[in-house]
Image (cartoon, rainbow, N blue to C red; front, side, top):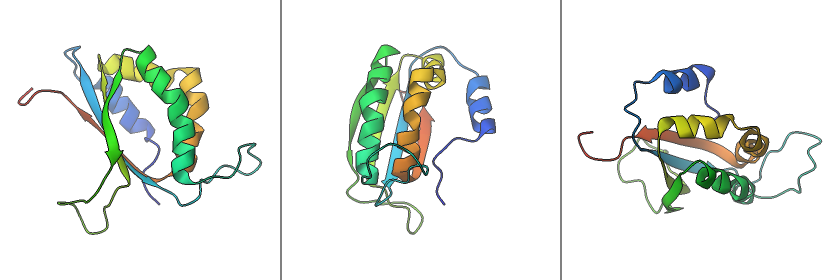
Length: 137
């Protein structure tokens, strides 16, 4: 089983991280399930993992913008050049936020939380990596 949802201690660490208030960028690495795995009884039409992620993105993308963020770049991963054996990804997305607090507020928003189940259903594995734009920052 891959890493799809953050653990409570990861969110606590993110919230407690020393912060200069400047912009952050989140690197998203995504590996989709062949078929999305919605909870039993969900009203959603069966679909691929990629399609379920697009359902999530249709709402989450607007939320990113609402909190002052922007998708900088994204697309398919063609090849993993340096990584442990078997650590391959389908897509990547780089999202910039004005502050870490803006990201935390977004993921705490009930509207965002209401769409996040599509992401959970979609992904077999993922990475979400907090970065600080600028070398040596």
